[in-house]
Image (cartoon, rainbow, N blue to C red):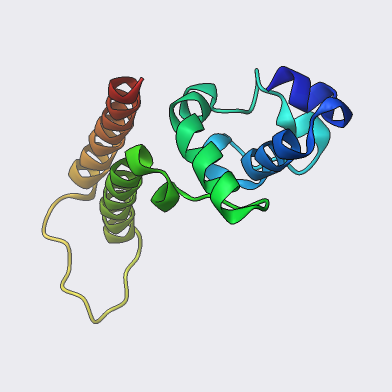
Length: 139
């Protein structure tokens, strides 16, 4: 990763396809790189995800013979985690919507707003802990 990010001109053709695939694929970054500086393996890359996904990355790049954009769905050990994250985020968003001013066609909230805010805060913490636990279980 360090060689590829600092000296991409030293990579072979095959290594360049792998590096370009990693750079274009959201699962491997905290934020998708928009410049060479964003490709820092120490600040932005999810090194453990890249390491765990390495056989899959190689297999896909070799089979397609080109640079590809990978998603969680392409990487077996990330499929379930991605689904879990989306499910928990959807729950969190639904609670957030319930807290905000809704349209008049909905039933009024019968629970005090501060109780819902407290629940939302606790849910957010639980989601973050669950995601971290799943990531550590995969390491």
